[in-house]
Amino acid sequence: MSELPLFPLGAVLLPGGRMSLRIFEPRYLDLVKRCGRSGEGFGICLILAGREVGEPAIPATHGTEAVIVDFSMTEEGLLGLTVEGRRRFHVEHTRVRDDGLVLGDVRWLDEPGPATLRDEHALMSVLLARIMDKAGLDHEGPGKGDLADAAWVGWRLAEWLPLEATERLELLQLADPHERLQRLVERLPDFQAE
Image (tube, rainbow, N blue to C red; front, side):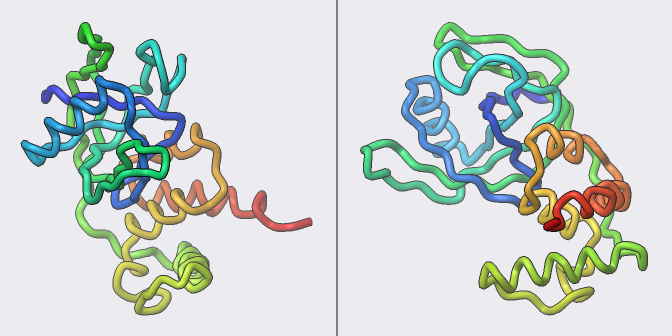
């Protein structure tokens, strides 16, 4: 078990994914200062009840460790952060500090070792390559490099396909990258234009 400050959001951060945040509440400004000094991360969890601003929100029991990779000042004079998702965790218990920051006792979830895409999911690598081409992102080609890694392909598709936040949370909870890809395969017909 580890104690981890939690940042409840209306979005899900996935392992390897990046997210931009605007920080203005004192509890989160203090959190960012501490993380900046220590190099430690904080947890991002989907909000189940409440709002991102104001009273502490109730976070989902699963989340992703966020590590700060860049920061800047926004046009509004707010602190802007870019965070990257690292390890998945399960929240066992939460408590709220006097300043409103939610702390969680978390259990880090085991990640399976590298897994090559199965033949039945090869199309997912092709789909992701096309998405990356449209976004102007370099890659080695379908079925090569990261595009051959079942976990990486699943996380990126879960991040970039038009899924609801609750669907991303469900995918975050799955340990098996092949099961995650299969769930995405089953959703593909819903994304096709009529």
